[in-house]
Amino acid sequence: MRNTIALFVSLLVCASLTTIDASQEDQLMRFIESKVKKRQTVRATSASGPEKSDPWADPSSFSHLLTKCPIPPAGTKAADNITALPGQPPRINFDQYSGYITVSEEHFRELFYYFVEAPYEAASKPLILWLNGGPGCSSLGYGAMMELGPFRVNSDGKTLRRNMHSWNNLANVIFLESPAGVGFSYASNDKNNNDNVGDRRTAEDAFVFLLNWLERFPEYKGRDFYITGESYGGHYVPQLATIIKFMNELHGTTFINLRGIFVGNPYLDDYKNEKGNLEFLWNHGLISDEAWVGILTNCTFSPSDDWQCFVAANNPRLGDYDHYNIYAPLCLQHPTEGYRNRRCIIRT
Image (cartoon, rainbow, N blue to C red; front, top):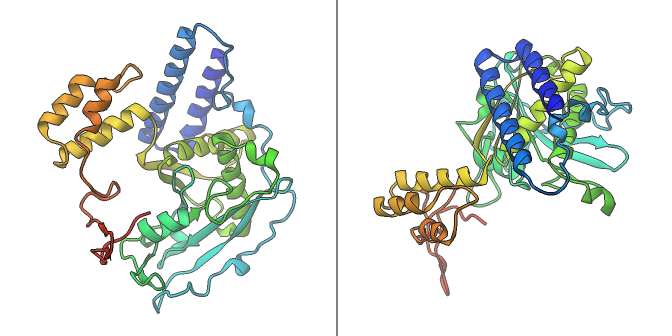
């Protein structure tokens, strides 16, 4: 197994040399090597139970993936074109598309996408794939309509306004509802198939989606491509990148011209995430210096943490605040008057 892991790492090195800048390659390799060392340590100290196979450390795990869809995609670019979204403002100066891409004919899995091109010089700008996390968060409802998309939903819940800071000002952006079952994406009602879910199938489906999407939008073949995401995208993004790099190397061709990955607030490690969250609250004045000292005294942010750490970490967090935007106004519900502040965004 260690030889297989070494082979996997070396394959990624070879593949990265041609498509990823040196600094990005070094960061990715440090991430992969840290995960490999951690996995080896866990296995070496395990006293019982058979060793579980790790598909991410075995490049041959992905050799079954097709590199070309045997059946032409059901949709077309022209059919996916959006004339106008309901309630959108006038004089929109960019093209937008949405539709379904089949990722499994056998199990009727189809992924829904929303694609916005750049307003100016779209043909010379890179292509970005955005993945919300969760798992289970909609890239359309969150990423496109609340975070980095071209529109924001107005308070009436029916009309839209432009987001002047949209990412499509600088790139062409695909918002993908992934995995199947999230948002408008769907799978068959076959219970056995739907039970066979997980990060690996999510990454494989996303890879097949991209191949078929590029057949529908051939002008983007060879375009500089980046994978981005947030939260559980800390798993989605590097895992999809792993498959793309391996498939490009295995077949000696560039199916997808992956140039880099970037993630925001990535969910990588339970303990480190918890420490980062608490430190953020302390840095922004939501936790006192005394409480922060108590947390550092009682918590190691490892599996050895006990009840004393739990008490120290949770006692300071008694106030109401928006976890996604600590400076946003709160919606406080009165028993008889409803929401007191009707100008604020109500998060559910």
